[in-house]
Image 1 (tube, rainbow, N blue to C red):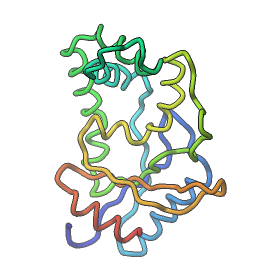
Image 2: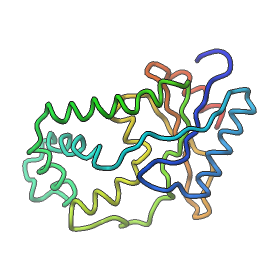
Image 3: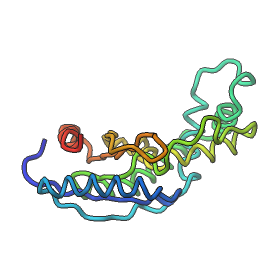
Length: 193
C-alpha cells in the first residue's frame, strides 16, 4: 500500500439512479473515518451516462455464452443474447474503449474512489422480474449502476460493509483504485472494517 495520506474522491450520486438517503449517510460516515485517519477526502461527480452506454457490451457478452437451447433461457438472458448476436465485435470493442476513456480519468486522478456499492437497499425477491427481457434488464441494471463501469474499465474494486439499512439489509461502500493498486484498496478496506 502507498505510504502517507491518500487522496480519496467520494461520489454519492450516479446518473442512473438516486442514492438512498441512508446509504448516502453511510458513505459519508466512511469518508469521515478516512479523513480522521489523515486522508484527504474530496467530493466528486460521476461521469454522465446511461444504461444504453453499457447495454451493447452486456448483450455481446451474453451472446458469447455457450447456451445451446436459447428458447429455454430466462427471458432477460434470451433477450440479451439474441440482441448480442446481431452486434459486430469491432463496434462493441469501440464502445468499451469509449466508456473506459470516459471513466478512467475519474478513477486515475485519485488514489481511491469511494462510492456506494449499490445505490438502493436490496429490493424484495421478484422485484424487476418480467416476461419482457428488456424490461427486466432495465429494472435490475439499476442495481449495478456503480459496479458496471469498473467491469468495463478493468479498475480494481471491492465492496466493504458500512452498516445496516433500516430495512435490515447490509449497505456497502465500493472502493475503486487505479490499475495496480489492489494493496492500497485492501488497506483502506481494513481501515473501514
